[in-house]
Image (cartoon, rainbow, N blue to C red; front, side, top):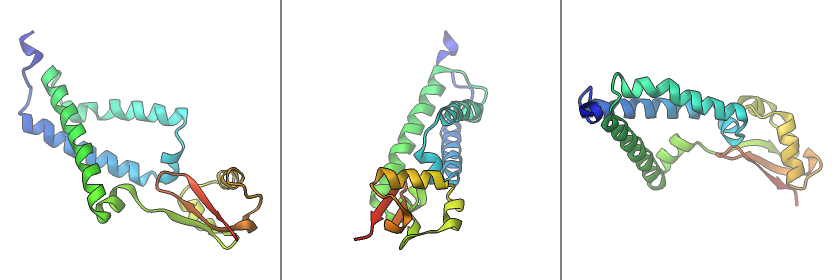
Length: 157
C-alpha cells in the first residue's frame, strides 16, 4: 500500500516523457494523412488501442504507482488543452497541428496525383459526389479534402 503513491522516478521525468510521447504521436498521426483520420474503421480502433499499449512503457518506465499514472494523465490532458488553446490563437500552430484543406478536383477534373498523395480512392471520391448530389465529375467546380478527412464538393453553377 505504501508503494501506491511512491514514484519510481522524479515527477519532472513523467512530465518530460509525456511531452515527448505526445509530440511524437501527434506528428505520426499528422503524417498518416487526413483521409486516415476521416474514416474510423474497426482497424483504426484496434490501432488506437495498440498504440496506447505501445507507448505505455515510454510514458511510465518502471513506475506502476497510482500517482505516476495520475500525473501522466494530468500532463496529457494539460498538453491537449494547451495545443487546442494555442491552435485557436495562432494560425501557424493551427496549420501545423491540424493541416489545411487540399484541393482534389477543379473545373470537372480530378487531380489524380493529389488523390494518391492524400490516399483518397476514386471510390471514396465517387461516394462523396453522390452524397452531395452530383452525378458526375463534370458537375464539380471544386472539391476539397477537409482537415477532418471529409470531402466537400462545390458544384458548378
